[in-house]
Image 1: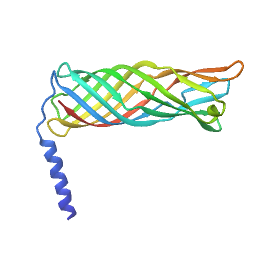
Image 2 (image 1 turned 45 degrees about the vertical axis):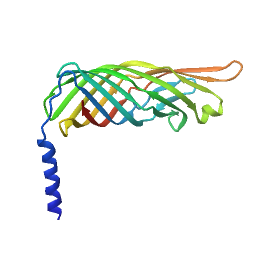
Image 3 (image 1 turned 60 degrees about the horizontal axis):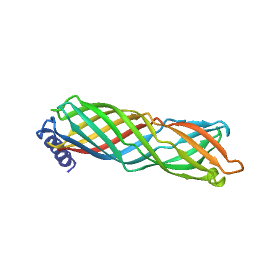
Image 4 (image 1 turned 30 degrees about the vertical axis):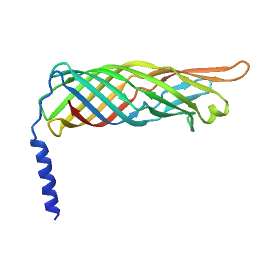
Length: 218
């Protein structure tokens, strides 16, 4: 029975593998949808007045991208997502505490080059611009106790992607990709008083982003 199951699995894989692939060409749309995990760099900034580091936690969310192929090899890709939500922590070297949550959207426009548009396995690379929009900052813990407010400025920076499409049928494929984004924001913490205390710091998130998607060529 086990041998029969293995043989059936092998036959299914071979059936997928021998399915004809329709080459991508100018005028095609390449659509992907899946899950991305954002992994920021380990330390994202510091607040010298408090003697603490700022640490932004990782997050996962549904993402989508669409590419219009101007030629068989070259296309323009737009990445979009549902809002990512990150915990923001402060770390004094011995203890870490959550002080806020923040949401962001990462629309990214990239030029991409497909090395093998006629193959079953299609690697590609891309380079572009990321616009990270921060919103819905919510103070927690110490900042909430101090009745403080946190604001993060939006970020504009470069972005890069390396990906691989593995064709499953003529039109449908499985995708995996890794992105790097240059994300940097100026953060302002306002603590009410007479006068107010304003703390400012530069927050460098600079994440690696890992994604797995299902996609279609239209």
